[in-house]
Image (cartoon, rainbow, N blue to C red):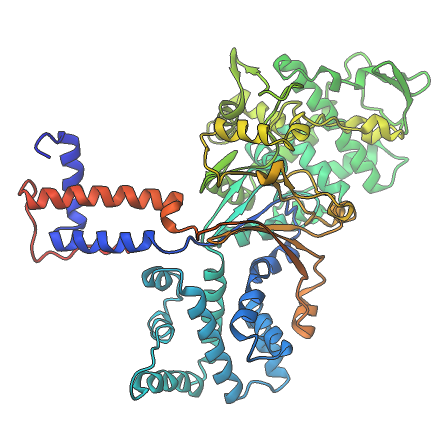
Length: 639
């Protein structure tokens, strides 16, 4: 201590402003040591939401089926199935369920008393793994004191405390404050059921309500996001990359989701549709718009590929290969007839140059994306809570793939004279994405398109074939070759190599990623490489559910281990309210810990342990008189 460096002493003096006495330090050390020995909070992992708002909203409300499990655990021997289902529905949609029950004349004083008792008991059960302070912070401020009192009711010799709590509930009902109290309790229950949420990419596209999902996530208590290729596409569009703009517009016209552009984000398609009507006169308005934006996209992509030979995507330059004599194209030595002959804006002598009209359409669409205030707010949230990857509690989370070569080693990828691989490539991509939006760096802005669909993009992981799928009937022409990662990720050797590259060596470590739909209906397992790799794209998007056979996965990691829940398709909120019809989910536990995982075993636990060491040094400084105590000064409480 006597040889303590001046910068360490400076830090301890700052720390002493929060903990001004030995007793204050001692109290905080005791508190933090106790927290280390609590069970870890429950983490949920979901991916590939693709704009499916209603299904995602319900999964958030039922906490991936965990609420129903807890209700059965607490009340299964006291309440019948119907009563348990009614209670679950109330927790999922309290406002809507209360309104329905009111119309049906069910809201009697007896109903309120029973319901408040049941909700309080369930909240108390869920709160047992958290500190009292953390639970208080999760409470609605209007009811924090009362709920805190009710959660900690203890029987005594004369049952005085229980009578006191009965009076609280009776008063709440008598003054007609029970509805608001139920809303507060149900919000607390859902908050306690899931401590942290991980979204492993692809919030946008295919489904039509990504904007509503973003609003939900922005109000969620604790989460992180690993960017997916569809997310980075919208981020690139919001940053002002014209090719990203064209691809985003094309995706949403193709899936008939124009409302997210026009209504949700105020992006007008008028200039595009007018141009399409005037240029592609033999097509219906929707087909004309798709044809117009596809040609614009192919031209913009061609310009980027020619500008950046380091992308190594010359094989995607196909407009100049169109044979107008017989309307065919030759790719890899094979000639294919084209399904479309309508290319009036493609100049054979300069096929990747936009016409003046196309240039105007592209410019107006790009300005609409960059000037949308709501999109700006959502994209900046993606930047603030998101990243290319996340290391959390010994797990590695990323959306797509780690590019590998044919031998299963990390692919060497060169940009601007620097070679990247594995973690360094992910770090480069993350930094480039941030410079593109916040710094408007031209090369980084171009790179956003590469991250969306590039040959060796870690978010894409396949050789995207837009032209072939749009204009060639032969399905073989549109087969998109996948990165070797998707072969090697079945091997424990490969997963171990990747985890070590990211500094993860624990037996608890896993790779968790999405992006590639698991064909569960055909027997494919989301659990690969002996349990070290978990792929959690189960088909939230309705367009994929015929392929997957299910409607999404949730990976659950709690203090007992890991399990994965497969969800069946969601019908409607109306069905839930009227019939208490929940999403059916099947659960598979694939890793059970011999001893419960405690807070001390987590990343947060390591930070707490560091804080404890700092506090111990401060305590020594007080005891040795190196820092004077400020007796009588109130200290901040950080429990």
